[in-house]
Image (cartoon, rainbow, N blue to C red; front, side, top):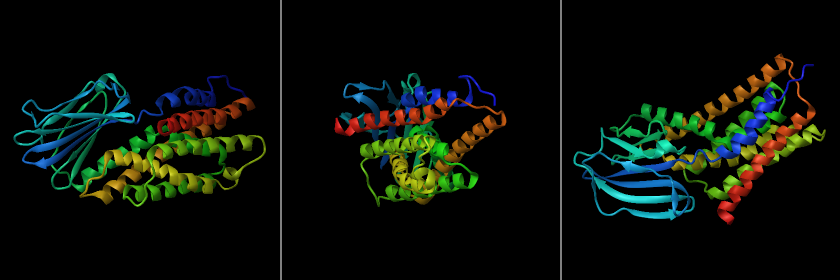
Length: 335
């Protein structure tokens, strides 16, 4: 069987894990802008920017239409990992149809989640990218527009949620056979759908930092199970992968709910927004699983093989990245 050099498929994946994931683990830490309509063409503004400390924050600011007036002085204070600014603004005629721009975001990797809360309970949610840091405040949207917005947010979140994808990748390194893969992915989907709904609707509450550290531990656990299997001692994940996927999927669903809480739900279309966000997560997850399976299928068709050391390196790389996250996230609430 033909061996391939370092440029081969799995060495490339290994390099990606070692170099990219630790650096990109917190990419989905967007700034957050909330405009809450209070009546008489006035709005309460909440501006939350990721920060490394009280004096270090992203160099960005909100630019409102030129005829917007400040109603009182802005209040700024620091919380763990962010700087928050609150103010009230007024504009004759309101903000509908006007452009809101974020200056300074184009020179960083920080995205901005913008949310407009209207008096009628409806809302508008936008994700601003560094190359397009502006949006137009829209009139109240229908259910179709809400569905589209939250579907896209769900896909973007899972594809940017590298810890969740790494967990799925570790599972795929253990599970063999089409039916077992389907059962495992389905169990993970059902589990995180349950806790996503429960946490979003307020039935369950788990503090964010300990939860994120535990999610990282779940990745390390499955990585260790891969190593045990390669040594001829298959663990629980190899024997009943759907059970492990379901159990840890409950944790990952709480993580998805935390991300959704950053965006919030439109009060006039909560069921639609929640359903479509979850559907978006599933679409993104299936895209990732399909891509991995196609790559492995391509490797088999090309009769590529790697030394056993490379097979072992993959789970060790996953476990190392996961433990890096454990220490980093535990430090956020223990330090």
